[in-house]
Length: 306
Image (cartoon, rainbow, N blue to C red):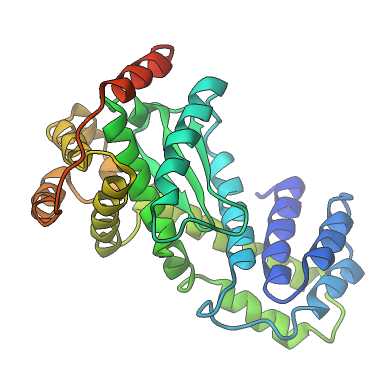
């Protein structure tokens, strides 16, 4: 059974997203302030949903601000499943490399910038939520041999955000059901039955998106596109694009493959990706050289990784 606290969190997250789809930032803060008081009354929900009468039934023209709030809700779900790895120096370093890559991407700016965070799990995976929230697990970091590999992996995730692959997945979610309910009930006062129905939908929606990233992964075509973007982004940043190929090579025959979890479940096999990556690398005009100073700082920062 879902706990009252979880229901409150889900309703807060869902309403925040929906309100953002049609309201100003100040209105959102007002509604969130009401909800975070710990009590959700019918009048509170009615007040929040009145502003959503004009909400869209499509994500085709979603704004940067709206994408940010959707991504933040998804990120909260991810962090409810994985703890954060507390290593300030390593987190700062990853954000340094990640944001260097971001500058040379096709989408160097998002509503609130890009955020890179390490998840404290041995599971091998990397996740990109809408709006620029990027997560890499401790298990995946341990498989990186140098900064070139790390930069190419982060560029792959930045590619997902740049191409808005997350939003493409969300379009197919059950948010449309929530919009339908809100459209039907906007002029009415919500009763407990409708509250339960909306809460269930929001919980399912956020769960769908989180599962898409954690359990099922993006569609294969999106993964191949992100690989291609990674090669071009990393090259423009000054990294050797072979870093992605080197990483994929290390994953071939990895014993963790048998677990069927994380990266091995959410991404196409390394073997399938290697051929496409090689072909794309051959089309690049030139490859930047690996720099010893980058490898040196990588080894220094990751020395304390446990």
